[in-house]
Image 1: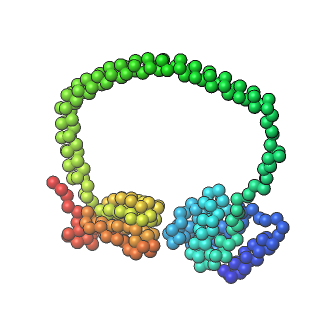
Image 2: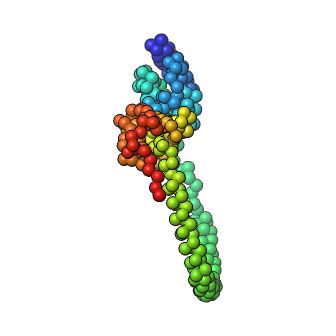
Image 3: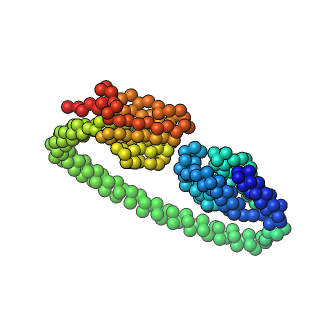
Length: 294
């Protein structure tokens, strides 16, 4: 079935390449995307699984299948994405990417000639120089007239700024003295609030902290319900808690660090390999159970 599909696609594409009028890139992209989608659906493969294997975002794969050229990068990069998609399906990625044309920017064939340019006559030069001298004289006179006004404005602004600075310093001094007691009370309240948050944290038997060292697709299931599913960028730090069971599934296990109940963080698996980790409350060791402070 796969060989017949590829044969029909390549035969149709070669006939269009030999035609007199070249086919638009968007139409060719739509044909390539339709072939890839047809093969994916025949093999019952979801678009999310393709995104995990190829490390290509789901919206990019969907744009390729729907032939949305305006949602994709430059054609040279789009060829690489098509190649990765086809190879993940077990097809010849080079052949698929070859049939997406890359147009070079058109070069202008207009030739400039000095003969076609208008020539200045002596009368034109005389009028131009006269206009230039008049503009220069007017500009100098206005500049000299405004210099005195600028100096007066600068002196007035300096005095006003000095008065405003003095008023600001007085206001800051009075505000600092008034807020000194309030700041002390706020510090005590912040300390109490921080203590309460520490007491509440880690109250559930299973707590998993995830740190992303590389971009990865993630799915987190908390007590039988999916709490998160999507792609997390590098540098993301997230924490999930569960009463009974917590399941973590990563598409790029080598880019995910996992720490259980504030323990030592460890890599989930090898780079580029999907992996699932299951944490159950009744299977935790005594040293892995959360400790409540206070």
